[in-house]
Image 1 (cartoon, rainbow, N blue to C red):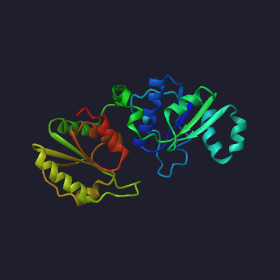
Image 2 (tube, rainbow, N blue to C red; image 1 turned 60 degrees about the horizontal axis):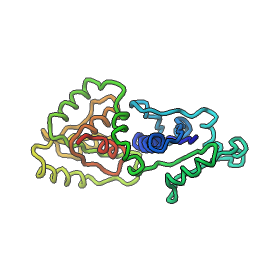
Image 3 (cartoon, rainbow, N blue to C red; image 1 turned 90 degrees about the vertical axis):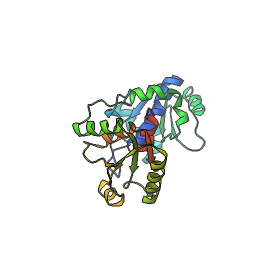
Image 4 (tube, one colour; image 1 turned 60 degrees about the vertical axis):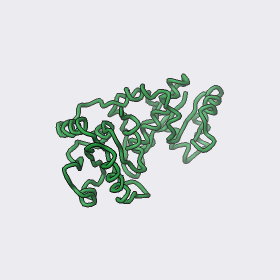
Length: 248
């Protein structure tokens, strides 16, 4: 049994989930996810997001979930409470082959990391695209945006302003907008951001610029981005996944 700890925002959760699903589907390993301990003291109050999609996973028991906080504070106690188990934290030496080798020797493996490498799960891309579909129907306002996106040469622009250390300057986005205006026939730009008011002040407005404002939540934003044909995105796992799941 391998228990993988979920943590971070939506993008990071999708990386962790995709990695675990690949272990399950491609390597026939017994995978469970800790859906609780990684969010308990999250500084940004992030929470589990996977249940917004048609994901398929097994939740770890309370007993196994408690391993991660116990091991962080009292490693000696964790060895007593979880005999025959092994803890792995992803580092530069981590590999799937190493994990499989340990899996054959240990009763239980507790695994933590972000696994931000598409090589881990590229082989199951089509399955992931089926699972990472919305469980609930879009709001009426989101449906209107989606129709605009589907009926245009849509360009998703994702500008992240919060929970990030290195902000990308606005010039990066403005230069790419000008570049795509010359390369694409009648592009329409859809602005997604966690600070849409700042974007409205920073990006010149015209009929080809649409600021996504009236969606119900960031899950709807993610789905709308995923349906765009082109992307201008910064260093965000959120927009990385929208692009990777796109059909274009």
